[in-house]
Length: 289
Ligand SMILES: C[S@@+](CC[C@H](N)C(=O)[O-])C[C@H]1O[C@@H](n2cnc3c(N)ncnc32)[C@H](O)[C@@H]1O
Image 1 (cartoon, rainbow, N blue to C red):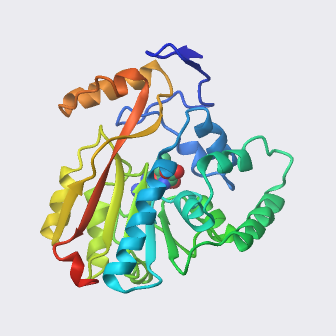
Image 2: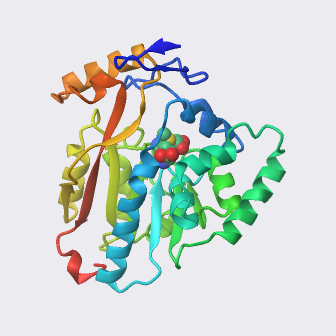
């Protein structure tokens, strides 16, 4: 246990004591489990909530894309989709709180029965309205669960920080009309974004990324500008999660200081905050280009 700046007492997230090179707590171990129970159990303790905050913005962008492009059934690529979290929220119209209820304290299910329960749930609650969801992630096991459960329609198992997509992966990436992400920029950089844009040839998918304030978006915005995009930051900030402990908070405050970002009233109070960046081709009104 630790006491935050605000004085609220929260349990430590299980196992989240190490920090990675960016100063954030490392949760790598929960991204590679065969199902999402460890993911939701660990992140619930930190009030992880950015997918919930992102949901209405992604839904609005999807609707706007349909209207502008005339494409009734757009394909959405979620970078760092993990177990298909954003797709589950959008496709099944559930909340993060409902997903926490669904997966926490569910040790009595076998892996297969948990999966069967999710498959049935998706069949009964598919509000996709024809939208298709592709998930890109470096975790094979998380992607497998997301596809098998039906949260996403197809998976791209790749680390585009490390290398180019294979030709079949490039063809899959090129299907995307919209590219979204939560909690992933930082793990992925302008290298991944550039490879996704290159996969499309001359076409440019719209993009919406929720990015922690400690990670400057300029390198990605510059990469996208060179490819014919305009980027705007949506007003406001969005709570991502509580700090895992005082060490993580101190390291993130250092990183913010280094990036000349003032944490007063935000990260100084015990929460990580994200911003929303919207990137669209110079003339989005002309539809897919
Ligand atoms: C914090 S989780 C975010 C998951 C989900 N978007 C959410 O908000 O709940 C970060 C995800 O990024 C993935 N990831 C890390 N490095 C990656 C890379 N180089 N390429 C693709 N995915 C990566 C991890 O496997 C993990 O699923």
